[in-house]
Length: 250
Image 1 (cartoon, rainbow, N blue to C red):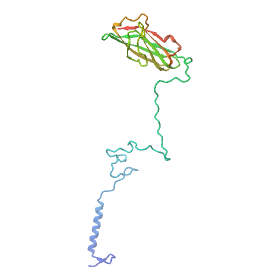
Image 2 (tube, rainbow, N blue to C red):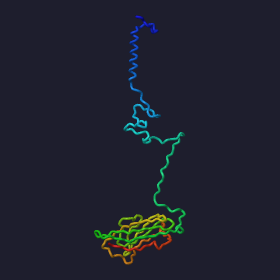
Image 3 (tube, rainbow, N blue to C red):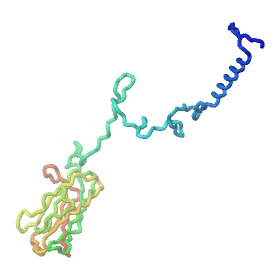
Image 4 (tube, rainbow, N blue to C red):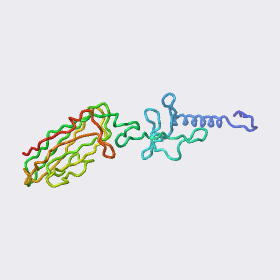
């Protein structure tokens, strides 16, 4: 049989060359059956190998881990390129309490106009020997100026005591002298021009005291603009500041 040389100085039979060629073809064909390379994601989106990808092309966050976009910030606050710390914006301050009068406020010049209305003291039928009821007082600022010290007093029969309602800012309801009405002074603060407030003053009295009202008593409500030291400022129309009312018993 004729010998073919491969340039190495050694000679191989043709049959041996055919076997080697067949083996090389077999290996090449086996490589063609391996898994294909991962296909690219949506246009412009890189493919992440081994990590689930959401429909938008962004790798999904494994269960139990926080997404970097939603995780709570940690460490020091961000700094600018110069190394200076960027200050946070302060939260807006909340206004508290009632407005305060301006420095230019002069009660002698900034005269107010207040009015008071009430349907009277209405007491319900006795329950366990006690009557319960209330006086509803409506105060309105009909003047052009704000009132900075809304103040009023209420006088009722001597046997009455406070029983819930809008008694905040009021002195205890009681009589200071025998056979005189029980009274209370209420300081309610700011009232803007054109605004009104309604106060329900709850009261109670033993039914046995029915008809024991003093003959010298007048049941009334009287409102004015007052100062911090008890001043009473002039009102444009004082005729509607005081209301005398009746007591109704069911």
